[in-house]
Length: 447
Image (cartoon, rainbow, N blue to C red; front, side):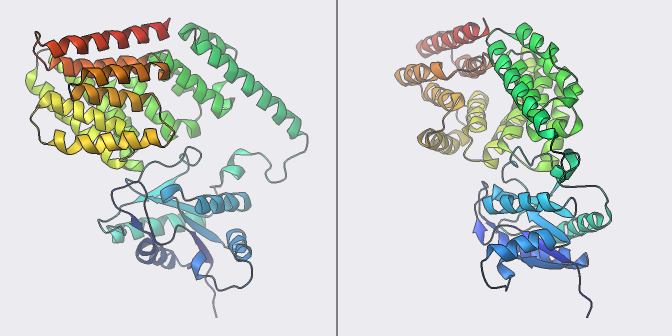
C-alpha cells in the first residue's frame, strides 16, 4: 500500500467569531477548502480532532507537528492553540508550512504579519466562498512548498546556525539587548524635545537594516510623533525588506506619505494592503484620511464637483473600516462626521451613531481605553449639540494626549462640524472654543 505524505492541519474548530459581522464555520472551511486542496496536492490531511491515538492528547499533537511532512495553518481569529502549534512547527521544521486566513476578519498579529499567508473569502453563512478558486490557489501553494528549498520558518530564516547556535553568541545577544533598551530610553526622552533630538539619536545608529526591529519601529513612530513625515519616508527606504513588509510599517509609511503630500503613492500602498490582506479598520481608516485630505484641497480650490466625489470616497472608506472591525470606533466616528457634513438629514446618521457609540463605550468599559476613545466621545457630544457633555469629554481627553497630531486631528474633525453651522450660530461659538483648546494642547505638546 502506497502511503501519501501526511499534512497536519492547524486550525480552530466549530463556529468562531473572528471580528467580522458573522462567525466563521471552520469545520466547513476544513471540509470544503483545506481538505480537498491537501488531497489534490497529493497529501493525506489530518486534523487534530481526527486523531485516533490514545493517551495524553498533547503527545500525538506534538508528534504530528514535528513528524508530518507538511502542515497547513489557518491563522484566522489569532487562536491561541493554533499560534502555539505554529510556533512549535516553526521551531521544528525549516520549511513546508503553508499559512492562510479568512479575508476581512481583522489583521494578523504583528509577529506573524510579515509571513506570507493566503487570504480566502468567506460566504454570508460563514463557510468558504469561491471555493474552486481558493482550492486551486491553496493546491498551488502546497505544491510550491513541496518543491521549494527556501525556508518558511522565521527561526531558520533569521537565526544563523539554528538550532545549533554557538554558545558564544549568548554574550553578543546579551549586549544587544542592553543596547536596544538604552536606545529606546533615549528615543523616549528625545520625543519630548522634538524632531532634531530624535535625529541626533538616529545618528548614533549604524546601518538601519542591521538594527533590532523594535528600535527601528520606535524610531519610525518617534518621527511620527514629531510630525516629521519626510523623515518617516526616509527611514522606510533604509530598513530591510521583511520589516518594510509588515502591516504596521506599511500603514504608517502610507500615513506619512499622505501627510508629506504624496497621496497617490499612499493610496496605492493602502489599496495593495487591502487586496493582499483583506479589510482592516486601520488600513481603511488611513485610506479615508487620504480621501478626506483630497476633499479639503478640492473644496479650498473651489472645485465642488471633485470635492463631493472625494467626500463620498472618504465616507465609503471610513464606513468599510468600521464594518471590518465593529470594535474600532475611530473610522466609525469619522464616517459619521463626514456624513453630517455631506447631508445633515442623511438616514445613515441615525443608523450608525448608536453602533459607533456602543463600540467606544464597550472599549472604555473593557479597561483598555486610549486617546481616540475619549476623542470619539467628544466628537459624539459635539454632533449631539451638547455643550456640557462636550466640555466634560474634553477634560477627560486632555491627560490622555500622547502626541501633538492627535488633538490637531480631533480639532480638524470638529472644525468640519463647526463649518457646517451658520456663522452667527450660538452653538458654533462654544464649538470654536473647544477647537481652540485642542489646538493649544497640540501646541504645548509640540514645544
